[in-house]
Amino acid sequence: MKIFTTEDIRAIDRSTIETEGVTARDLIERVADGVVGEIVSRWRPNKRTTVFAGPGNNGADALAVARQLIEQGFAPEIYLFNIGGDKLSSDCRQCRDDLLKLDGVNFTEVTGSFTLPELNSSYLVVDGLFGSGLREPLTGGFMSLVRYINESGAKVLSIDVPSGMFGDWNRGAINRNIIHASLTIAIQFPRLAFMMKENSSLVGEWKVIDIGLSNDAMRRTPTNFQIVDAAGMRMLLKPRSPFCSKADFGNLLIVAGKYGMMGAAIMAARGSLRSGVGKVTVHAPGWGYEVIQGQVPEAMFDPDRNDTVVSEIKQAHAYSAVAIGPGLGTSEATINALDSFLKSSGGPLVLDADALNCMSMRRTMLNMLPARSILTPHAGEFDRLFGTHSTDEERLLTAVKVAEDYDILILLKGHHTALVRPDGKIYFNSTGSPALATPGSGDVLTGVIAAFLAQGYKPEIAPLAGAYIHGLAGDIAADEHGEYGVTAGDIAANIGRAIRQTMGC
Image 1: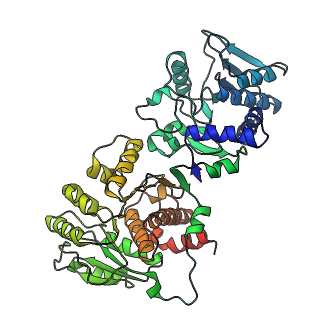
Image 2 (image 1 turned 30 degrees about the vertical axis):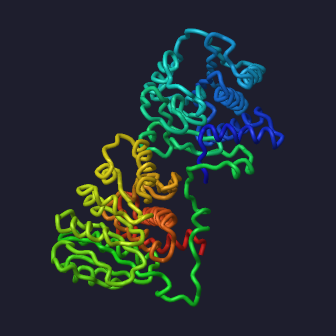
Image 3 (image 1 turned 60 degrees about the vertical axis):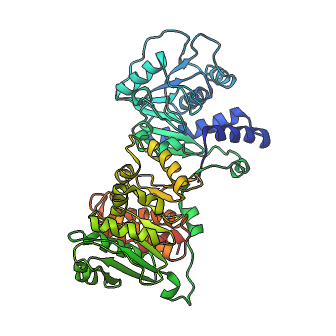
C-alpha cells in the first residue's frame, strides 16, 4: 500500500475530479459516509456530540458529517469557525448552507470571540478544524481551543489528521498544540506521520476509509513510502518445487553468542531454520558446543578458538549469507574479530545487536561494510552508531542519509518497523504487536532475515520478508499465549505457520 505526501494526495484528488466525472462535493459526501459509518458503529444517537469545523475543506467534511449525523438521529452541537467573516472555502460554504436547510440545527458560526462550549469525558468531539493541508502550526484562538479539547477528557474523532498535525513531517511540533485524537479517520491513505512513535498519542487508533480516488492516478504517482501488506508479501515469496533439496536453499553462517548469552545464538538459529534455509552453521565460543548441539541439533557448530567470546570470524566455506551479532558481546577480542572480517568480506551481511554495538565503539568499520549490507538496529543501537535522536522522525531522516552514504539497508525496528533503502525509499511493516517486545525476539528476526538472504532473496527483499513474517509469527503466537505470554521461542516456532499463511497455502 502506497503512502503519499500531502501534495501527492491533492494531485490525486484533482485528477479524480478531472478524469472520473466526480465533483469535490461527491468526495466530501463519501468522506462523510465513511466517518458517520464509523461513528454509528461505535456510539448511539444519544451520545453527546460536538462538531468543530474549520473554514476549509476539512471543515466542509465535518459539516457534511454533522448533517448526516442529524439524519441518523444524533443531535450534535456544531461550531463553524469563520473568523473575520467571508473566510470559508466554496465547498465549506455550500456544506454550511445544506446543513442549515435541516430543522432545529444547533449551529453556531464563530466570526469573532466566543464562549467555549461545555466538554467533558461524556462527550464525543468530531474534529474537522484543519486537515493535512495545514501549512503553519496553530496559534492564537485555535491553539487555545485545541488545548481546551485535549484537557476536557472527551473522546475525539479527527477527520484526515488531528488538527495541528502535518500529514508528512512534524519536526519541532509541540504536542499540546495538536489535537489528541482517540480515533483518526484517514481518507484513502494512511499518512506518513502515523508511522512515527511520537505521534501515536495524537493519532490514537487510525482507520482508512476508501472514497474511490482514481486508481489510475494512484498507480501513476510515484512515492518513496509504502506499507508492506499481505498482498504485497504474497507476491514476493517464492513457491518451492517438489523436486527441491536442501542444497537449493542456501548455506547460512550465524556468528553469535558469548559465555552467558548463548540463548541469542539459539534463537537466531531457530528463526533461520524455521524460515526454510538449507543449512545453518553457528560460529560461537567453544564453550557453546553442547548448548547449540543440545538445543538446535539441526544446526552445525563451528567453535571459536576462544572458549568464552568470539575472537575470530572466518568463512571456511562458501556461505550464501552471513549474519553477525546476536549475544556476541563487545569484548576487545570480538571488536577486533569483526574489524578484521569486514576488511575481507565480500557480499552483503546481516548485522544486528552487538555487531552494531561493536561498530559504534569503532566507527571506522562503517566504511568497510559491503554494499547492500543489512543493519537491523533498534532505537538505542541506532543512536549509539549515528548519534542521539529524540524522535522516530529524526531517526528516520538520519537513516535515509546514512543508507545512501554507505550504500546499505537499515531496518529500524519498532511498532512500524521501517526498511530504509539507499535510494531513499522507505517500507513500513504492517505486522506485529506488543507481543514482540520480549527478550530474544530481535535475535529470531536476524535469523529469519539471514535465512531469506541465504535462499537467494535480494538484500532489498530479505528484510522486508523477514520483518513481515516475524511480526506475523508474533501475532500468531499472541493468539495462543496472549501478548504478555509470548516468548522468543514461541515466535520462532510460528515462523513456518506465518509463511504458510502469507502464501495462502
